[in-house]
Amino acid sequence: MKKTLVLAATVALMIGTFFLPDRHVYGSENATSEIDIGIKPSRYLFHIKDMKPGDWVPRTMIVQNNGLKDFNYYIKLENTSESVKLYNELLLEISDEDGEIYSGKLADLHELPPRSLASSSEEKLGFTIRFPEHLGNEYQGLDARFTIKFTAEGEGNLTDEASSQGLVGRNGSPSGGSPLPDTATSMFTLLLIGGIFLLVGGILLLYQKLKRIGRFRV
Image 1 (cartoon, one colour):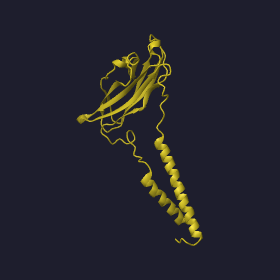
Image 2: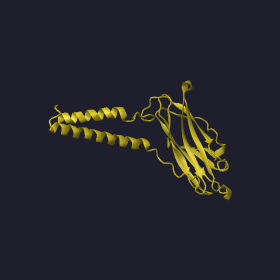
Image 3: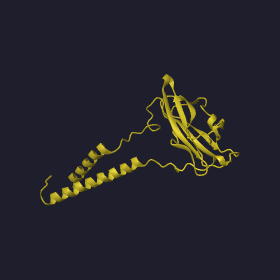
Image 4: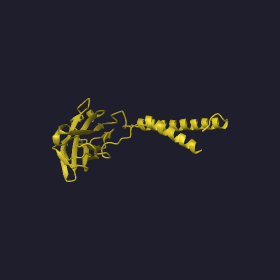
């Protein structure tokens, strides 16, 4: 029985070594880079399907220095909308623990002054999108899309960048719905592990059957 268990463990280990996905962790859990900026959330800071005149939506962004060195970082907005009509009218407020650092139109924010962040530290920034009350029916069905970029700069011209998306719709636009999490990798891993156990189980059953009929000796 012990030899059977050893055989099963060896087979599972060999298969897992060759086929399981790489599990290296980067960023805040493995700070090996001199300049390494991280943000949370990293995919969408804003995903608003239907804002109405007078609405506002607050969000919190966490900026992290996951590297070995202190750095300065810059916040920059880039418009990715097909139409700039709504984008040019939306209002944005950004604040830190000391108060407001920006208040104005989304389209007018090109780049904020640099902010410093020590190694292995983080800070929280508040972002609030406002839909002006005076915007009328001509803005129905429109959306605004933009990218919020965070660029870190350290000594020796070392840089790193992270970004989060923003999407604001009026009357159900955009039609794509809420962003879905990327589960393909985890599903593949679960299926692969299940396949490994089935394969090992089949080998054990075959081994036991052959042993019983005296064709396989250990």
